[in-house]
Amino acid sequence: MKTLATLEPLTTRLLEIQRINSAASVLSWDQETYMPAGGGEARAEQIAVLQGLAHQKLVSPDVQHLLAQWVDPATGQAADQSGETWDEPSRSLLREVWRDFSRAKKLPSDFVVKLSRECSLAQQVWAEAKEHNTFVKFLPNLRTVLQLKREEAEYLGYHDSPYNALLDVYEPGATIAGLQPVFTALKTRLVPLLKRITQSRVHIDDGMLRHSYDHARQLEFGRLVLIAMGYDFERGRLDLSAHPFTTSFHPTDVRVTTRVHEHELQSCLFSCIHEGGHGLYDQGLDQRYFGTPLCDSVSLGIHESQSRLWENCVGRSRSFWRFFYPILQQTFHHQLRDVEIEQFYAAINRVKPSLIRVEADELTYNLHIMLRFEIEQALVENKTQPDDLPAIWNQKMEDYLGIVPASDAEGVLQDVHWSFGAFGYFPTYTLGNLYSVQFFEQAKLEIPHLEDEIAAGRLLLLRRWLEQKIHRWGRMFTPAHLAQRVTGSTLNPELFLNYVEKKYGELYQL
Image (cartoon, rainbow, N blue to C red; front, side):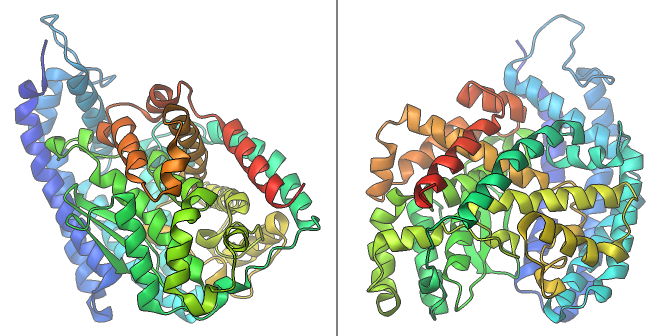
């Protein structure tokens, strides 16, 4: 049986490409954290050169020749005329390298460089436009990026819609046809549930979350929780950024960011937990395979499941706060001394339609994603023009959540994603929500005392379970295959719906 040792000529080339991509990621991380405002244009050129170089190396004749020896060019399946079989890691690696190669081969290198440059510039203009609440400032860059993403879809090829080509980049195999029934099922049950909650006699006071909270102490508490989760600060950092994110250059260098608002305790707290979930996934990848798809996350939906599992299933649970609330109370004694744990638990789980996606409750969060899914699909299909976005955004916010943003900064400009060309990314957030509950329910089945462990502040048992079941496999399996292996079922929205109906039915006495 053939093993990865046979593929060393290929993996050596892949490692060089990954190091170039990692260097570009370092520059992108710096752009979002510490780069001076005046460095934007030069940084865009630096990143574009590196990404263009990485692309050229991936589609080089050398890589093509190696793949042709071992892979069926038409299907990507591992092939060997001698009849000798490959072990599973080798088969998976060849399948995924072929996927990356065949996709990259369709994109001209000069197009990759241009797209990278324009996205890097657009990110910086977006940040300025958001800060000054001026959508028109961002509009020219958005038009440029959108047109390039339409071109990308044409290069890649697609069935039914160009949006499918972009979806597949972030969630392999995902299509509009596959996602629509999921969103329909969620809408059918979540919208009536939201209506029942808003009509409930239970009114939750979350005013204590908006007292004045010291920035440094918020960060200190966030860091404490990250350590308890198992996030390794010898292999990571916690920094500030306008939009919290996680980036990884190697399993030994995985960085998370958060943002701190004096009068929004939840913002720093839950963004630390959320990004920590992403960080644990990246730190848990098997570094022996670095440079190959076996040391890369399987999809953004699965990646998001890890952040949402920690943020919601753990971080918004009673069990979690039995241990951490006394510490938080001590950290902010003046603000929380008269607040009982049940009051705090209710406050952090209050359901209230809100303007900002990243601060939305578990229930309304998916409605935010549905809105973006519909808008960007129409944009890519050229059924909606960027100029009309503020009005369309505000109308959908009113239709789905019953509220209208007072400014574009709180509306169409709130997310960074479109600035860096991530059309097709948003649906993975909903997939992550659904997978998170499915994985957490399975963890509770396999670890019957898990909630007692969480209530004692011992979170490493769950962290190890996730690493063994999900993180360490990289792209060994497809998302559906991984879910099947871990839980015995592919994606099952019913588990998420049952979870929120039970949790919020109890909270709001429905």
